[in-house]
Image 1 (cartoon, protein in one colour):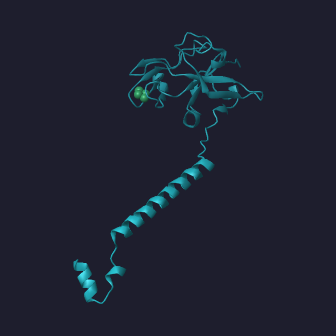
Image 2 (image 1 turned 135 degrees about the vertical axis):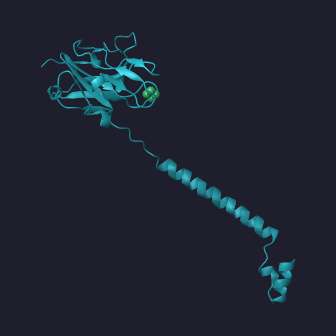
Image 3 (image 1 turned 90 degrees about the horizontal axis):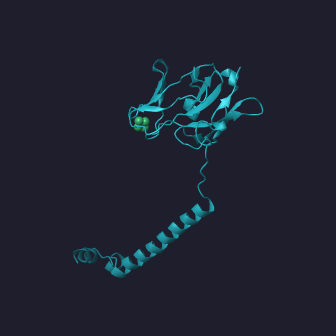
Length: 192
Ligand code: FES
């Protein structure tokens, strides 16, 4: 009421300046309608142009076997593909660098001949190069890791390069010889 008095005193028409309840209700209704239209438009846009998730290519060529030194764990691909390539006297294997506890990438500690996870301390056995394939590399022996690390599918491409598919892995502890480290695709026989 005080505002109406001031407006009247100053010669203004209060009806031109004061919002009635009807004005507010009308405005709110329009806001609701426009808001719904906006949400609908965004949803339609999402439908017409869905977000596309580009999966990384999991099949990679990693050079020729002869590029890897015998009895060495190669760290060449650990940062890019999370893979260690291990060359034994009779072949190669690709160990997938993912801790089986919560998925961190372990470190290869050559001097201690083991892989060590920096997150919660899991340790995995290193390499017995005298044993050849399939070897025991990557078996968990300390910390919370429940099982060995996995090996990725490995083979030889037509151009003579090592080809690895790290979406297909083999688990040492499984009894199925097509899914564990005895599976033909879990190791690449190669003698120089
Ligand atoms: S993630 Fe490796 S020990 Fe926990």
